[in-house]
Length: 153
Image (cartoon, rainbow, N blue to C red; front, side, top):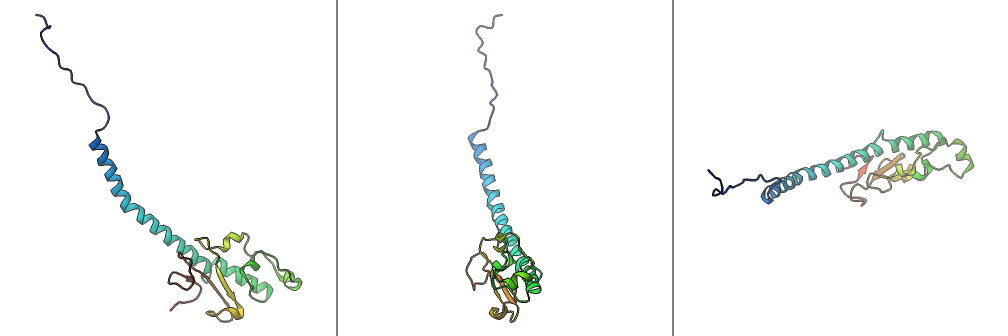
C-alpha cells in the first residue's frame, strides 16, 4: 500500500490570543480601573486634609511652633516667616531660640499654598491668641473646605 493517494491534513496549533480575547481583557481592566482610580484619588484628598488639620490643629506642628515662639519671645510672631528667620530687632533676636520651623516649605499646606496666620490682636477667631488656617483644596479663603484652628459654625 502506498500512501500517495491520501492527502494528509495537518492540524497546527496556534499560539497567541485572538482579537476577541485581547479586547475582553482590555475591557475588564478598564472596568476595574473605573472603580479603583476614583477611590484612590478620594483617599489622597482625605490624607491631604488630615495632614493640613494636623498642622493647624491644637497640637499641630505649626501651632506648636507658634506657641514656642510666643513662649521664648513673649509675643506671637508677626508672620509665619518669623518662625524660620531670625528677627532683625536686637531685643527680639536675643530671645529668639529658633528656627522653630527648619524648612520654609513646611509652612505650605499639602496643596502647595501658604498657611494663613493672624496673631495677637490681629486674631479674630481666637482672640488674644492666634488664628491659623489653610484655604483647603480649592485654595480660596472663606469657603467650606478651609481647615482652621477654630471651631466653625
